Image (cartoon, rainbow, N blue to C red; front, side):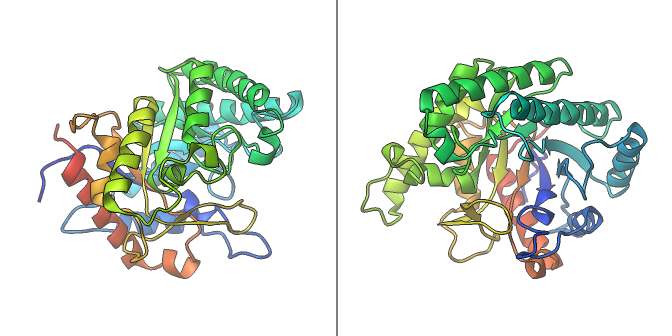
Length: 345
């Protein structure tokens, strides 16, 4: 067993919400249930260190009071967990690429999220983490004016960066093929470069979502692997090196995940990378190995850039998500990642 104790191992709470709660989807899973499943997971005496939160009802109301924030901190701490990154609910009646009203609503979500995140840090339950955002714009709408829309998103991201920076926080944009201006690795880099706040606004890599960047999903012109590609190891390796060498310098938050190479959506969530459980035999990723593309530099040295890493697995069935073994298996995969690419302090 490795003696590495960094990065800390977190579990995402938003899989209990994302893709659920609509008339054609399963019910949401309460935060208390997600916390219990996380706290009860254990592998050879090792447990999860913390959780990452979605600041959206019914888990966490974005307009939560200060007393509510304190109660949330106490609840999570009582389960032996810390809090890491938080997801700003920027998608609802808002867009980083919209008109003034939509952009104002987008920034308001960031402003409220920053207040919650910084207060949790003041309370001593959040030692590290970022505030996650997306453009909240469709690829189709972005494609009507790529240059102008990227500039507009960058302008909004800069404003978000100023809000976060004032409270000692950072913003991370997740690479996911369903968000306009962020739907390919080159578009993502262009957006971050135009935002031009590298110390404040960076990239969140999700192993599952970013894998689709290599396939050119929604941006065929930026496909890295050849058309006749059948997941040959040497081709996969070169594609991942190209991808991560380009995006790693911007990466400030990392999600461990599994993907079967297909896309999926449920409820009101648009189609994007399909998360799989850690043990899915159809998974295209070797989780323990392939995390290293992000957690080690081009010379193979551990970067220590992320103080915590988080498992992300959205749109699993409630039957799968409420089985304790699911989370034990996920924790086992996370431990392997830390054994292979972590460090000790």
